[in-house]
Length: 303
Ligand SMILES: Nc1nc2c([nH]c(=O)n2[C@H]2C[C@H](O)[C@@H](COP(=O)(O)OP(=O)(O)OP(=O)(O)O)O2)c(=O)[nH]1
Image (cartoon, rainbow, N blue to C red):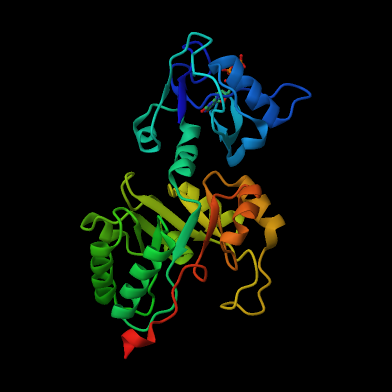
């Protein structure tokens, strides 16, 4: 990721930034970004290459900003600080240790989080759940899997986590509703049901793990952000077989709520990879769900 350091005298001066600047009258956001990158860092990006990442409103007290963040590849030019500022590349994980302004935290989250969040579906037993989780991840290559197994006892659930950790790629397993497991197990983080998140007043896991919350309204998204969540899921967006009769909030409402949220928001409920572009256009982080990756039970294995 191309990073610059803001000049000392500027607002949030001396801190790191994603290159960019203010939109001028008569410009689109995309034109402004292409112009600012060229003026400040000597690189060219093509407007057709820009992908929306996240929009963040932030009140610094002395100034309120709306950061409209887009992702692009440098199409030509060697980056240089044309205003005398240091300009350099950092890997997504190295962004974590960078001294960025406060509004940048969710932007860094959006860069490091995947576009697809896989959630486990129905399962008949511990063994079945583990086998299907591992097989499904292997097949779909989902970078982040939420192990949601409400039918298992707490002890059986802990066992299932330990089994999955042995066979899944590092930092790909999210536990569901059990933040205490984060202390002893190398899981990627914890995903909370809304019921569990509603009981909390602060972040229950350290900053180096992900915290996600299942949300269904603007008020729930605001609470998720207030307890320090890194992301939320929002839905159901579309009708689902698990909630017959519920038409879902639809893409317009999703767009409105994700636009007002200050954390990355995944579209959940009836959504699959075929809705990814739609979710990104709507200002979402991507899609979350079960049906597109959760394997059918393996009857031969059962027998
Ligand atoms: N470009 C950029 N600005 C950021 C980031 N994070 C963040 O809080 N900001 C804030 C700082 C500023 O208040 C605002 C961007 O303003 P800017 O860079 O166009 O303008 P500026 O205040 O430095 O100077 P000026 O245009 O008023 O002369 O957004 C970031 O990652 N990149």
